[in-house]
Image (cartoon, rainbow, N blue to C red):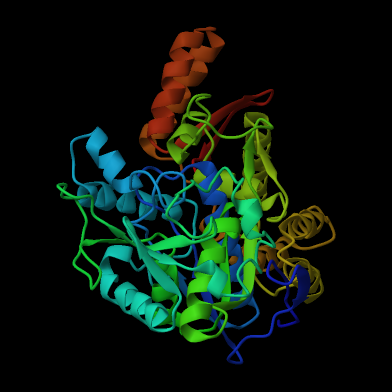
Length: 462
């Protein structure tokens, strides 16, 4: 079922019909993790948004090639050109190498995106595996007069590119006051940024390479221009990321590719808004930077968190509260309970699917899509076999892993049933401590139990 897809292009500030470079195909580049620590819920929102975009494109019969970078070098603290590399800083804290840290957190990242049912990107290139491509890109910019050298590295001269600032609409003098740009007296302009940083004299970095300009490492922005070109060509169709990337990272990516190749890096730029925590920012000092493990301790499943993210449009700020994410988990639980009782899937309700696709094709309006789903499943006039088939089709976009539960009654293991029976005895005896211990044991076996007026209600943890 194909119909026009409308996407909001940050570059043009307009929502227009998506026109691919090659008919029927879509090249998608997703800003991936800097692997110096565990991904938090705000990071995951960005990748869930990109995954939804990929799924919508696929549902419209596009053949998608998704590339997601792994930043394992060059991302300095503060996102500017000063300070310590985030990988090396994390490594020094635990007496490991930056290579060790990158390996550890790349694995954790891959595990986390699998848990929230993000489809694996077709290519996940590492910055450290593409040093040669990055050096070659600097050479091209140098030959065209866009670079200059100062004591700590090779820099891009933004004044040489009239189009610089087209993404953020931010002038150079405004950047001088920005909190994310550190003053460097040697730079010609605050907008200029590092392409290659020299290793400090008398110090051996964990990650450094020889180059025509001296031993060092690439700037953070360079990898995305180099790797997107290698795997998708230039220009490609769509580049995604968080709104925090607009003013610095993505602006500089565009500048590099435009200077080197004379064309825009990508035709469409899509950015998701921030996730707030209880109405404010995430902060280590406030102790509110949550990972999937933190959600698990509150009985919130990765798919429950995915449902929570789908409940807000990607271009609106999403306020994370425990009450809100628990409500999302309960809604998912209710959907799963209904789906288990449906009959084997038969034919899809095309009228309902048309409404659903109209919603997601309107700049990924997932809240409207969920409303279509719930109006449909709550319609008593629709047979359960049609509900099963139609919701499965919707789930190709929503990614709630419902194929595992539709028309499949809950299977309770013998060990779980024994614990459930023991817990019922404890509840009757009002032995709440014993009841809680048995609940925890059930949790360890992969089940969540709720106490309702009708008695205990068991679910598989999802």
